[in-house]
Image (cartoon, rainbow, N blue to C red; front, side):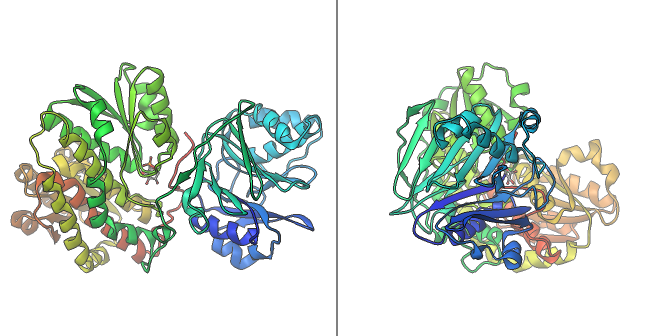
Length: 584
Ligand code: G6P
């Protein structure tokens, strides 16, 4: 949902910002822009398209100066046009800003500013903020006060990075979307996310909602509600190398390949805080979106079927309608820790007195800071827009939590075989690539699973639709006969997940029903019978039931990846999507 960045120091600002924007491009990639300040004043380059393409056409590095701001966009207000790209400026061309978020009252602000003579060149909510700051500058004693007066008039969500001609300082305001300050030696940075800064510093401050920040090349000050605010300086554990492709063709492929090792790290997570809050609870609510929602379904099944603890998994954006309001403990699962729908649910739950547990990959994220207890899934930076390793690491952590609760008789050691099984599958990637070659001409895909393989089926269908744009949906295998069977015919693909657990006989019957309707049956299974029934198959390693959700997700990630590559789609940056969804 847009990546923003700012820099002041001794380096060429356009270079730092350009490199940083490439690291933030997963947040949005329909247009981008940079503005820098030099002796000649403020100059900007912005255009539609991917950052590298804009650079090839317009050369960002011609922008001089050692202070600047940049933005990569995921359009909300106004189409994908050069004029709507950020940075935006005021009537004088002396104030420049970039914005992540949505200003809900921008229409009324725009109308009142227009009456005062302001002329707008874009359709964006962001441009309105630049003009509002310009207006406030007329009466405020300094730029900081003008900015704070302006943001006091905004409703909605924003992270703003703002600079103006005549002062060597950058100003920030946060209300919602993430923003961090990076502290270097003789240079300072700000960005939406840590990977943009890893080449320069690991010392960061997580800016909080309501914070107004002014920073120069060697100092910073933070106020909140007009009062000076102290914020802890964190040292991030991630390295710049972790956020590189490291020889893989795409981040998605690299992240798929990291999973064997990452599961081991996830299993070592400290879950004591979460377990302490969950112990003795008989009703647990889980809130999450996208892939994280599916890992919540695994957690639910473990809690309900193995521990007889009731668990309700609610999609973040539905929480306010579906909750009882009496939840005592809410588990929020979010790779980024910044998903707006999940965070709103957490805030609502807290207001009603619930304790919250955050399961996230980003220490220091909003979810991390706002939860009563946190677990770090330790998957390392996930850059591809679609989730892969965060799914398997979340499942590993959630399984560890479930198994640490009273009443559990399962042994976590059975999960360590998941890492080995993943390595075996990855070593046979060529077989999945060959399968992708055979499936790439088909248009409709149903993924079916039962019990612990059902969340993996959901995840497999999501991966395929996200990066190939083919129609793919998942069903609990027993549901096919209640509707979807009517869609089955020759050329429709049914991908069946058929591990040899107690659900096998039933899913084999469901597969027969699909075959009888001429669907192209593709089995992912360790059962001879299931494989024998199918036109195409991938023999899975045999694993204990607890490892099924993790192990069965991996070949489906690879299948989606290879199909996308064969279809010449970019698996790292699917159209219309963004990794961190910071608007509701
Ligand atoms: C976006 C991403 C998905 C992700 C979802 C939830 O839609 O594209 O990959 O699963 O957000 O993200 P979270 O960071 O909360 O897990």
